[in-house]
Picture (cartoon, rainbow, N blue to C red):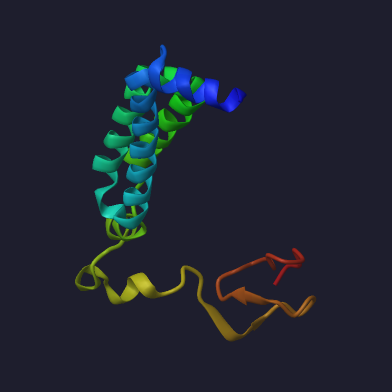
Length: 137
């Protein structure tokens, strides 16, 4: 019998339409999060939508007991500043036409015949000391 009283209070009492609006804002936040997951290239738009629905959750749900509001706000901000992997790669990569042949060479060149007589590790041709054991070459 207690559940009926709670339902009656929720639908016809103080909660009424505002209580249903609180549930609606929460559901729209969840839908926006799923849409962000499905369309990561539209991360800014879905992040803004999550923040808006999070702020609207104060109407009817008291901000989802403040925890829902806070989690929605942080999630929306993170969605806005997040960048898809393709975007990060394109910002940090150099087109192949701009790569010079010397750019792909290793910084230190080792000769097959240049090894430390003490430890046997490869050393640079112009090295005076072994970088591994410190022996004078």
